[in-house]
Image 1 (tube, one colour):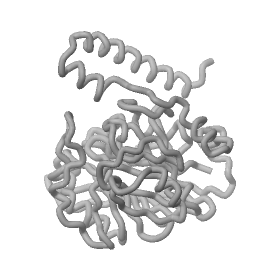
Image 2: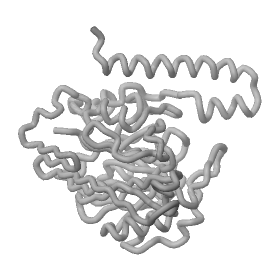
Image 3: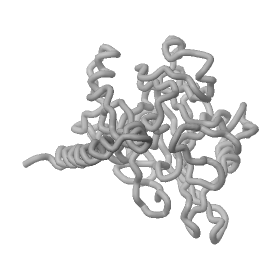
Image 4: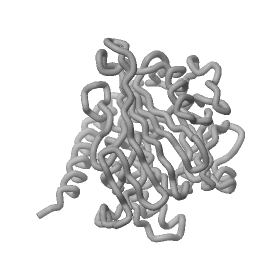
Length: 327
């Protein structure tokens, strides 16, 4: 019998092949529509089997996708809202404010890491490239994650510095980025003033390229209601009350992740950029950064989706996640 997970992957790949074939026919029509489909819809794989590739780059044996180890560690303690393994801990909480159509519901993950490298990144289909997507839950399950959030959707754009698990994938600085360092610190930086190789040399483990920065030294950043992350074709406004995901640093190796649901009157309206910054500030973050939101905003814990995207309890595909593997 074929294992369920194998069937799951085969199904995704079959659907992708069908979609690609249909789009290829459409492309033959030429023109702007064909260009847009090729640039923003059709998958373009650049590196397949990323887990193996990263292991070869690091000179180590990859174990991040070994699902047979799930739950075998006697030191790991899991409850409905928490996970503890050694010095690593994750605590999930739900917050609801307001009432009626002004209700806002969001989920907070307070995370303490034994090492900064415990927080890893993974790509959809274990493949690096453009327009390759899976749900946060599917990527998390493939990597034995106990906890995960959506990433920056790097695969929608062809700019930005992309460093994941210490490996450089893209070096096209374009905006404010976020860098996770191996010493447990997290910093916002200007991508256009450095290079990916320099960041790795300085000890960067992961980067995200979205933004904007929400907090500057613990205070709400100015001008955040007017930032455009992308100005290319297909860009959507990130202003107003929206579902959002943000990452913040409280202290060295002490992070906070927040997913705000939205576009669902009576359950959660979403928040403005300033509103998200205020949430991060109230949680004690000194650095905070906005990443991909809308239908992509998802939090996963212990095999289940934590939040309720768009009030429909349905995930939208994304290109990448940040996660902690279960030990």
